[in-house]
Image 1 (cartoon, helix red, strand yellow):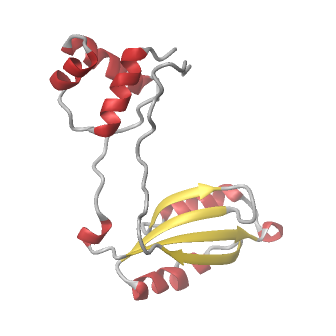
Image 2 (cartoon, one colour):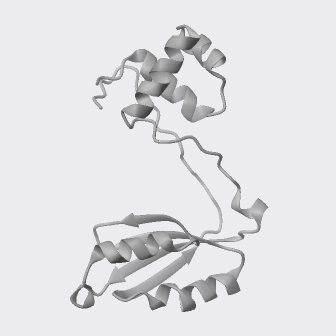
Length: 160
């Protein structure tokens, strides 16, 4: 499947405003509402659109600490990286998890109510996971840029 100009316009518009009505979206992209809806469904089925969600401000719900946690594994004592991944996914405090290449093996984005709650998470949950060798925490002071949109170039060809 190749994304055409209309698909790209749909994707750019939905990333900017996921709550836009199908009627308004169809006017922006210049095709009928049923055709627009069909294209959105096709993009979802192809896995280009993975889901729609509301973005919540963590501070407004009492999560004042956001930490980036770099994890290095002790590969000689590790039976399976897959088990580690499952354990990270099961931790409610972990809001994002990335397996990376480089000096560390994983980066976790962790949300907590306060520094005490974060300490309890570290001491009672994270340090109890077998195979973790090094844990380095950095705390976010300010969101300088959070990009949630991938602008599609109208001239470039995208195959999905």
